[in-house]
Image (cartoon, each protein chain N blue to C red):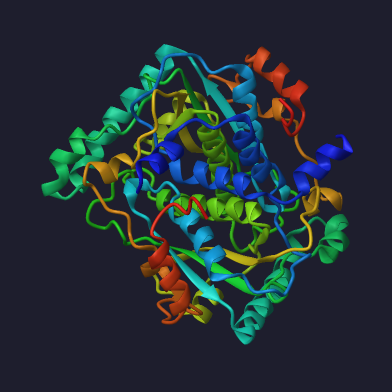
Length: 244
Length: 244
């Protein structure tokens, strides 16, 4: 790598660069609609996968793999798994919310041109599991960091990503031949989009509201009072900190 | 929010903005050294917390809380927990790597001016756990996405973050009064830094090497062959895609 490139990447972010990072974070959406059928170019997809691959990982374990699914019939099978899982989940939803639940679009498996499964190989650091003796789930968390990197890079590239969590994991493992020691952490629908919604779908449809940030801050211990100045700034700032 | 702000945030990213996002992703480090004692301003910290708070969350559950720890004595207690946990973990490490393990700096609990615990309240959507019937761990994963947002925003602000995973969770819960239904997902050391290392510490010290991305890509099913064009692009690109 050239020296000037190294300097460029290790240096400071100016305000415009900071704002770009915040913009990706604040305008990222869990996309279920608005997918376009256009294929994702290999260069774009590799950049997104590189972003995922540069996530932090416990003990530098890099436990992830990326299964690229394009086959229409396979995606239809996965969508069938989603429909079955949604039926199973429905009775768990409070009765007065079930009509809304049924109307929500919660996947874009067949509308998006590409599906991606991000897996976690739990055996990858079997020899020296640094950082996992007390918290063996850290490899799963590392894999989630990879998903979030992918998601944010995708937002910057104009690519929508939706995480489908209503799936029976064992059925999915069987369909994709995933061995016992590997966990499919995320099933993602990926594609260019016509737009990114201004608010999360579940907020727009009244499923929930954004909690006030100040209410989520605690001081020193759980439920600890204090940090009044910090909370006041949080209450003032309200939303996206553009135009500082 | 003003209309022009909305247009600004929902629009496309130009190349410079895309590169800023990639730069944050590729130059983010798990920081253990290089912390400066300077306090983090409230405005900066609120922006980082807002970034965390805009992570995706299953069923729009927003299960996270943020415990801000500044008290020196409390941080020393946590560091003692780390020392004890490291001793417990040591026998799990392959014998020939133990000397290196002992030398690695794996926390910056007292050098950083601020510690942050990101917790997951597993009861927050007890009424209607959308997306969690089959995968109840999704709320933990959402919380990890919040951590990664925080981490990337911090990189853009010149703030270093280190995730300490060598801690006995039950001991930490007791120390911080965290109730049973809440999981401390991440213990973070946070502070301005003198530099960001060019490579991850564990890579620099020879604990592990970056795996080739092409080797991690699978086609259609687990271990599925194919995606040769994609893998060729991955092998060509090698690293940080600057200067497109």
